[in-house]
Amino acid sequence: MSKRSTAKDHLSPERLQQLLAALKGRFEKNMNRHQGVEWNKVQARLEDNREKLWSLNEMERTGGEPDVVGLDKKTGEYIFYDCSQESPKDRRSVCYDDEALGSRKEHKPKASAIGMATDMGIEILNEEQYRELQTLGKFDSKTSSWIKTPPDIRKLGGAIFGDFRYGHVFVYHNGADSYYAARGFRGWLRV
Image 1 (cartoon, rainbow, N blue to C red):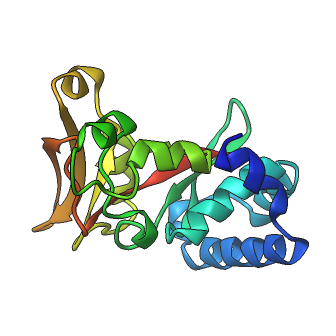
Image 2 (cartoon, rainbow, N blue to C red; image 1 turned 180 degrees about the vertical axis):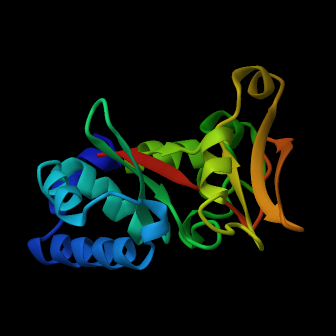
């Protein structure tokens, strides 16, 4: 049984109320991220999707500060991104994926970004999403975040990450098995 299936049922009603209050406060403080979206509609959708609330709680618990960044008008789903100023604190010092984690013979990191995201029920931002996030503020000015790597790059042993320096968004490459104290990952979720 995965961590996700055993933990998702253990959010207390009190924790759910704390999470909804944190999400509402962040939503109201950052209206530029979701112009034209109404909180009461977001909350109703959240309350109808308890498993998604569990994933949002994991995003919050690990320092991601999730917030609404869009609405898919075709499906009615709200799109949440990790909007913490820097790469989420409790998701740093991880390599890219489980294959990279398994390839390290010594000094292994605690986990992989893809593995953690899967356990949390979220996906890692891709390059387009990462650049979109950067239009909503200045993120990762002191840290960097792994982003979803195209298969052709990953097949060759690499992975990509992004950051914001010198007034610009940069996307770089590294070995997928590398990890750094200042590199984590940002996720997203549809609700």
